[in-house]
Image (cartoon, rainbow, N blue to C red):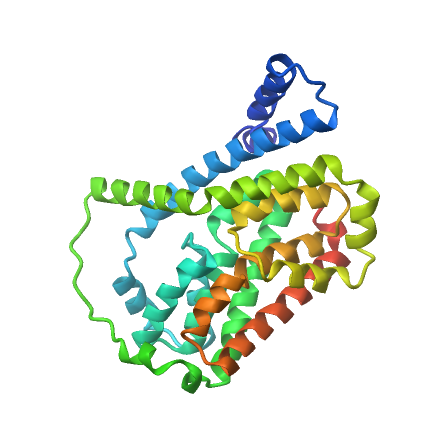
Length: 334
């Protein structure tokens, strides 16, 4: 247990980096670490470096593993299942794909075009940006492991339930016709060499970092401001566990935004530190990642209004329920 705690503190929370940044702020910048300015600078430098290190290592590892499961093989595996087991498998697939909501939409279109059940493809669409192995590790690096695991579990359940509800509604007629007309031609893929897989993983790291770096900087900057400049009584007064409106408010506020979970984590960390409810913070994170406005605009080109509205409604209600659940039982996860 002591070894696990040491590894967690040094590899995930990176206490060694925290101490190095403290030395930088106090000895190089000659600032009092207890001042607001120094605290903000420390928060920004430490979180940016930590997130980029963890992000690069995790995306490389996940992408290397993912290279063994190209879309054709994945479609073949999914096609062997039906019912709730297919939804579970679709959601599981989403947990091993490090995509944001917009990046997962082309795969969603491809799976739907290939004839996979609509509910299964929606389970993937919900799960992919919401929960993945990278989010589990990054959440654990900031919060407790219990929170990280619980977040992934409830996100996974939301993906399975949401996809199942949409599948049972038989809404195939509300998918734009061009999706079904755009059939994918299966092609046999040659076996990749180890170098090919490494190159693919490096490419994925570069592509994802290039796509999210700005959102990470913005998120960390907002988090640093909240953490060191906003009084705690204001945050706890607006978003505390006892405020019934806090969860739907956080979900509504998060929906128009666009960022990966990597960009929302520093904001969540700062809000939690100032007294915001756990469920409120997680609802905000889920809304940003699963219901971002750009992804809804992209889906509007693929889904007709009724299906798009049902998708948004199911996910929104699910996020709110999850938020109230965590706010009611927050003491179990802290």
